[in-house]
Image (cartoon, rainbow, N blue to C red; front, side, top):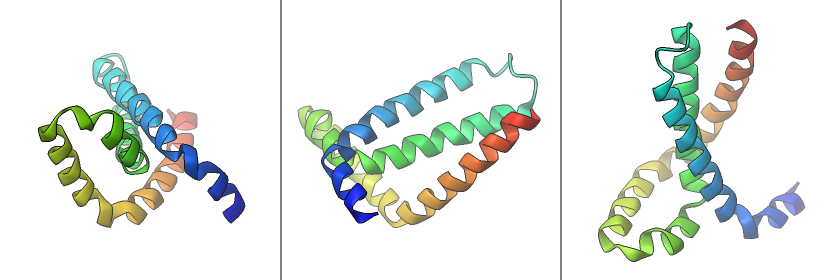
Length: 112
């Protein structure tokens, strides 16, 4: 298992960046579709899922984001550092909640 993790290590930042933008796109779509979705439970599930994707992806891709996106503005770099310091203690919790919520999303997709 460690060998697979080591192979992914060089590209983890890119995976995190791409996934974070995908999560942001899902969040925007979810907010725009508020009136179109019949089940509020499904809408809330999509909303929470999008936020979890963004949070986990930010942690995963933080170093790449810091290098390529936040390097242009010292204020943005500072804000990103503050967000990272808040998320760092929650890394394991966010990972477990993300996995459990992924299972719930599969169940909710079938039900709703």
